[in-house]
Image (cartoon, rainbow, N blue to C red; front, side):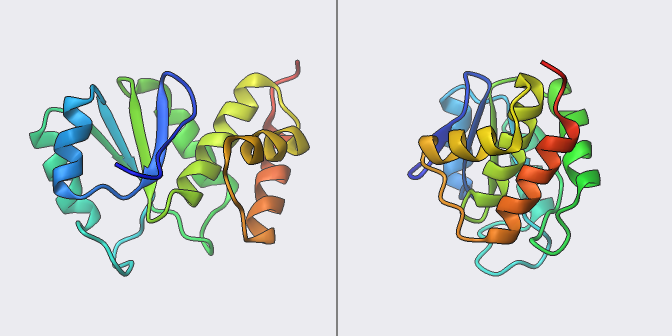
Amino acid sequence: MQNTMKISEQITVGPQPSEDDLQQLKKSGFQSIVNFRTEGEENQPLAPNAEGEKVKAAGMKYLHIPVSMNSMGPELVDQFREKLPSLPTPVFAHCKSGKRAGAMVMMHVACENGWSGDETLEKAEEMGFECDKPELEEFVKGYVDNHTKSA
């Protein structure tokens, strides 16, 4: 798959995989798939429920947390962060392009590592994440600043 970004040994972020990509992810050793797309988004090779069935049939775990730019809130990030540790690794997390997935994963990693919101945005940029939405940057920064473990 193209345009994937390995965040750590445990988690990689990218665009939505096709059915063939799911098989390739399994062959590459991925144990879990996290889907941040909402039902009915355009250009979905697989609807969330259909993707879940394919992932489970391939012997991987599936987690669907629908996130849109309008619905992204602290409770969804908390839900993801609460469920992520129970998933077998490595995990492939995706949305349509990887931006929402990248933001969700970076918020988790930042909070676990005690980063500030500004550090998180810097590290995300160094990794190649391009955020063209100021409201997403502000949300990430604010969430991390309010949820980071004290270093």
